[in-house]
Image 1 (cartoon, rainbow, N blue to C red):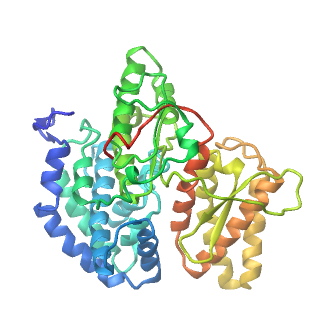
Image 2 (image 1 turned 90 degrees about the vertical axis):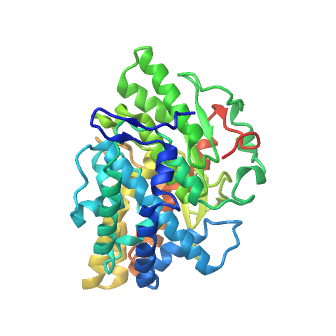
Image 3 (image 1 turned 45 degrees about the horizontal axis):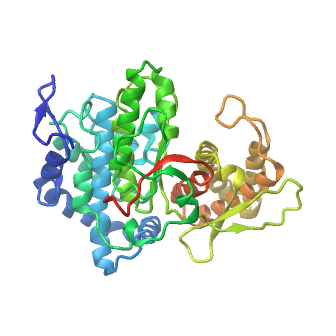
Length: 441
């Protein structure tokens, strides 16, 4: 356990830890008492805007096993938004020591993840449920609130901070129930068979892999990342190789969106100098997903190169998405392809303003199909998709385009980047699996 006593860096600023962060920004803190009513008022102002109500409704779908009134759910959503904002700001201050500007444009880049993508960290922040503050009627006030929080955080030095410093905040704000704790759920067969050992009594060695299937705020992942990084660097491994191997060796998932936000933050901070200096692209292997493998659907595509196709719910009644196994098994491909789709979604919307909607959709689908079927040199996925896989992805793209034309939002892309995690994790062996029947989440 880290020392909870306060310390100061060479800058004279306090180096925070889990206890000091929980004290300074927890439910009893002046920071929270100022931010919460402001956030609640902003949400009340826009909660009936379709995009905001959609994000809130989809977020509620992840709150399984918790019986609350709609008003209590709204209060929890605002509390979690507050913690998610703090996580984004802490990560920004960890990666760049310069003060956070008060400019609305720069603050929104932190909120929507554009800043982190510019730092070659592609999925730390996605267009998730907590980006409702980007809604135009409240974006300026939301940015002002972020600037106030950034001012409160500026008294701390996060560059050398303790990686799990947000776990205390998560535990203060996140609801608990037997259904959302892993101990109340059966372990699926693929998970029981995926480990050579489930003993996490000591940190993993530099060549061991670890899966935390119910990672919560990421305590075990953070410990594993730190242990592997230290062991590899001490034996003289190259920093780039160490980074890439850690990302492959230490992985996790959790069905709670805020938990994954905090776990990704801790994972990022645990990587330390590996990501604070120039580094290859980073796809943080922590996902918003349960451990159940989604159903396989037999889709008739009339192609001889067929493969299993997985079905994923959208959170909307009657709307499902399909992803071919070759894409679901490759997290980099999954992130890359869905990361390209916003351009096509916006293109469809622009085209639909000046031509027949169906013609606009077909034109964009043709362009996307050409992209899928073509070689993509100098990208993470240089080879074209098979004809079958391209057709399946095209059907999913069509569903996403139609949803986007009805309600312009990329939140479904966030869902689809995360939901297939059990598919690709089930196809590999891990040396260690964190067992929540004997460990607290």
